[in-house]
Image (tube, rainbow, N blue to C red):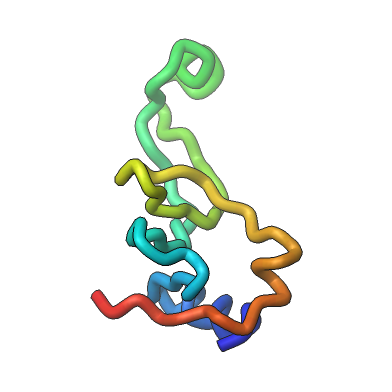
Length: 87
């Protein structure tokens, strides 16, 4: 599927991957907007004991098995090799 179709999958809560990302079980998913308890000194000094709000973002499960934020490249946006990850 193309990136527009893949984006709709993300918005529906489904993880996606590309066929070109073989071998490392990489996938992208949408993290919805929410809030978390302050974890750092900076956050605690600004929000105190309140929750820290954050906006929705894309996350990727990377080759190390950890998660990081993800921004699609031009190549990702123009690709037609997106797949829905079956969970």
